[in-house]
Image (cartoon, rainbow, N blue to C red):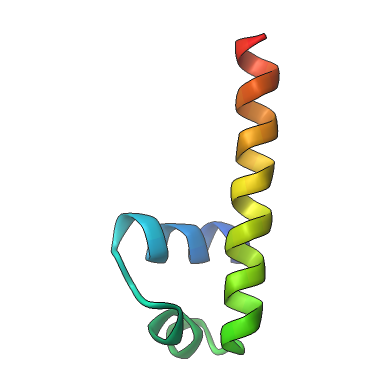
Length: 52
């Protein structure tokens, strides 16, 4: 989702903390962590499928 993508970019590319992400996109810290986990899991699945 677009929100998951935002969280991953902020966390991994821009090195934001989850607290900073939560404030920047107006969501609870737990939601930001969940979105990051789900986005990474989705990327992992897609990459495995594309490589296979």
